[in-house]
Image 1 (cartoon, rainbow, N blue to C red):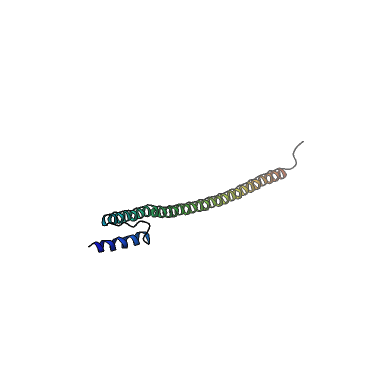
Image 2: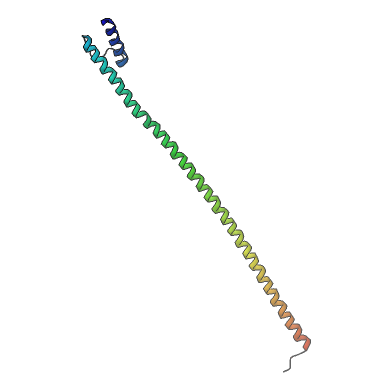
Length: 132
């Protein structure tokens, strides 16, 4: 049984340190303590790795979330710009139509004045010269 314990010690020692390392316990109790220390050391290493790796994963997830938010913000900005451009085009078209209507109204008013002046002149010319 003691030879199996020695073989177990050396197999754990080899796995833990990739070699025999500096310590070489002589008694089975010392070898058991060394194995326990190595197992705890391996667990400690695993614990540290388990704490560090999710942080990298979180960073990647956070970066992806930030990228998604930025893309959403860009899409919203583009949509706002499109809506603003559409409103400006509609406002320009409405202003152009209003200007056209105002010009047509001014032209109609000018024609009405001209017609009125022409009627007055015709009525005065049909009456003859004005008495002095």
